[in-house]
Image 1 (cartoon, rainbow, N blue to C red):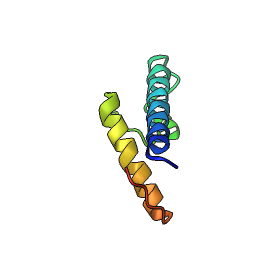
Image 2: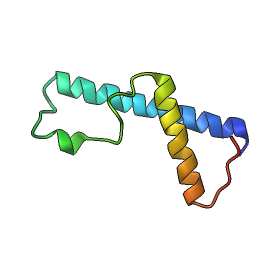
Image 3: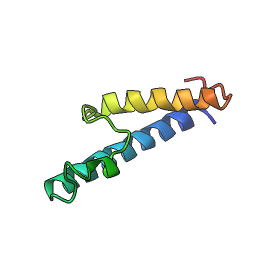
Image 4: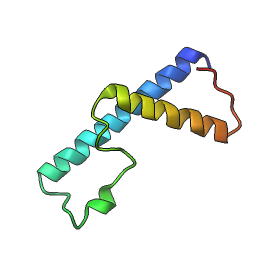
Amino acid sequence: MTKEEHELMIAMLAKQRRFIDLLVDLLVKEKIITKENRPAFEVSVHPSSVQMGQMYQETRASYLQAAEACGLKVDL
């Protein structure tokens, strides 16, 4: 993959995380998710990651860590 293709993948993963955040927020608002059942809906998204920049950086770090664990050298 090129550097640009890796950056595109990271951006799409960050966008997906944001959609998940919004969905969980909506489910909480509509009282579909409650304190009692919230653990069943939890995903590895930090509630403090509301800014795309921060979420992107967290996703990028996770992506690079996963690549390294698979033995891939990603030059970003």
